[in-house]
Image 1 (cartoon, rainbow, N blue to C red):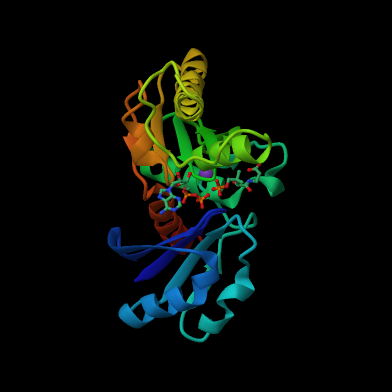
Image 2 (cartoon, protein in one colour):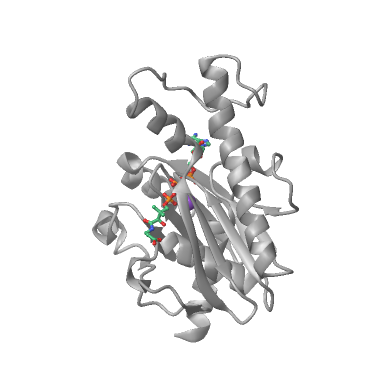
Length: 244
Ligand SMILES: Nc1ncnc2c1ncn2[C@@H]1O[C@H](COP(=O)(O)OP(=O)(O)O)[C@@H](O)[C@H]1O
Ligand SMILES: CC(C)(COP(=O)(O)O)[C@@H](O)C(=O)NCCC(=O)O
Ligand SMILES: [K+]
């Protein structure tokens, strides 16, 4: 049994896997990391390995309390991945993006793939059919867009994510909701259209905390799976066992 842990910039997501099956999902804040991991390990005594992806300041030492209980693997740039990394600064590529790219490569062989991860940031990652990881884009996520409008202006309130009622915002709050939500939806549709001009055929995977909210608003057919990064960690673990 393995416990996959995804430390993002907003929160931590974790899942216990038995083979390819998810037994349970967990979400918690990094301030409650130790307590939550301890509870999970108490409940699932058969967990033998932790597979961790972190893009936050949570490092390997944060798990030192569990070193005697389980094997801990922190995914790093020096691991082997099932794709050729064509990023010009491979050492600065986000580990979460590499894990998503690994999952896309392993789960959807021999095709072009675009992974969109809508979390704190929205990341776009493209892996071609020859398993070359080409790169992509980073833009602010929904929460970050709301926060930025408030934090960098004098007059804009901080609003919670809401579905815009009108495309033409008729008040300050309607304008903000339209700008943030329609703005990101158009961005994603626009990116997909640009990739389509370059690659006639590719599959699209949407993941991250805003998957469900965004999926129903997009034009294109996509695989929407909030759990894709955790599932990719599990697949990368199996890949590691075969290749080490
Ligand atoms: N309970 C929640 N707490 C925080 N964000 C949430 C929650 N539920 C949904 N979200 C959405 O998830 C996004 C964060 O996604 P997530 O993938 O968890 O981020 P990260 O991996 O960067 O920590 C936010 O933009 C927010 O809109
Ligand atoms: C872009 C990110 C901040 C996304 O983080 P997230 O939204 O998953 O919390 C992360 O992938 C990162 O720190 N990347 C490093 C820069 C790069 O990928 O080029
Ligand atoms: K992301």
